[in-house]
Image (cartoon, rainbow, N blue to C red; front, top):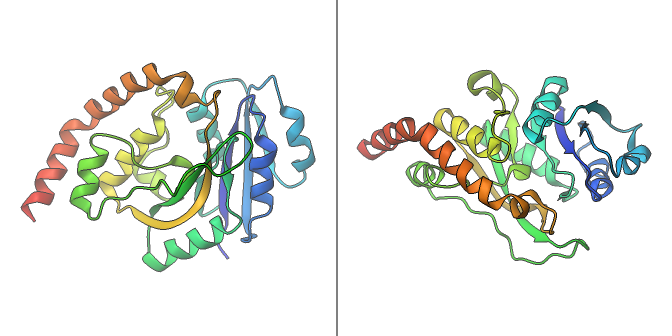
Length: 237
């Protein structure tokens, strides 16, 4: 069996116990759960019942990208996954996605997902999006992030080729990394919903919407020339 490392950045999140419960109950057992406490002042007591089942790292507050990077640094698995402390994995998420990765010899994949509310009730149909071919993938990722970060599974060797999360980007570190990965690797999509994505008032995408929009533009401009070259190449094929 190949080990899968799941990094859980944690900062003052009241749902952390639900995230961890979903991880300790994964059907795939060769899993390493790494919780990175990013300087929390609230809800840390909810982690205590899981301390014998997780790798627990505490650090000063530095943002989600810094917590993810610290998790990657301590990860000993062959594959990396990320679970936000307010989201939940389906029990079979790791097992099904790893089998999918191996079947397709994939380095990078993402899955379908549904939204849940603060009471963990499913409030949406499946929300995953995946363009039909590489040309359309390049077009879409050049304009917006279509990949839910907590649905990904990445062969850890990929980081040796593209680097890790950019800690100067508080909100779009995931978008920036996906663009770097897609420039060099194929992206595979598993249409089965395997993640529950929580919508609530305190979520970052609601609280920081204006700043996120500005940062998205920054990331798009950063990669504009490279993406235009790749699109031209794809069009010539």
